Image (cartoon, rainbow, N blue to C red; front, side):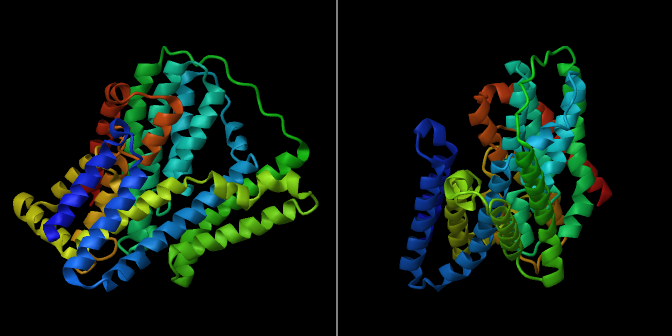
Length: 417
């Protein structure tokens, strides 16, 4: 029966990878796969109690994502991110490229790479009318967002998973990965500067007209949202409570603030500025996808297959850094969430304690390796849909830049550690 769970997982994984040709949403496939793996486990062992253990750890990640996404959407509803566009004042293509890349890099560390990519693509549409040039910029945004998310405990789903699981600490991951992640962006930026030096930006879009009250509210919500997100790691450090408690506290505080800001308005006027509206805008499909895939991985871990796989990899390759480097390259083809979840199941904190080089290097490789192909990260998939970027175009124009950055950052990390 155990072999049947592996077959179900592989078939489910193939269906997720071939989502577009099959025209079947990957979330539906992930949910079916997760339930079937646990069904097989329950029938074959007669014990369903293990599910509760895995559901508890999985729920922590899902609650964190739900809170973070809602908070960001609430800020966006108040035009908070519009003020970021005001920082970008240049018509020189290379200067704009570096500004966009660095803003994306640091913003994704505070928010997350998926949300940051969506925000930056929206900004680029206002700044660059030349579609071909904008596609190059969007490619750099994907690289920058994934690199920026890799060194922050709240910047990427995979680093959040490792942080919640106790494999990395907030201060440890920032200190160890900031420089390698920055190099993973700087190398592609340098090469792209030569490619784009003769490209035209085109006409920028007209500025959004906001009333004085809307400007005030937008700035308040932007600083409140960003400040509360930055405070989540601090909250965890001080209280030792799980990160999802911090993000729920942050959401609650910003929620109360938004209610106070609009207390004088009638229900219709403040409807689109409410948390209820923000909840309708969040990507619920992605949250359910993570639920399905993490449940499936948990089922395989309960069968003992992941530990067996770790032993086989160690025997076949020997070098742990080589194994993690390959996992990072694989994340360009296969979603990095299940890859990291599987690795967390393969190795325990007894094997590698908190902030061990293996966990930190895994966070870097899984985070930045997804940039090599546009389907390798949530950020890439999101902008692919927004800007109608073809898989082949990205592979030809951006993939090599991301690969250079990946190996440059990985090489620096291994050199330093």
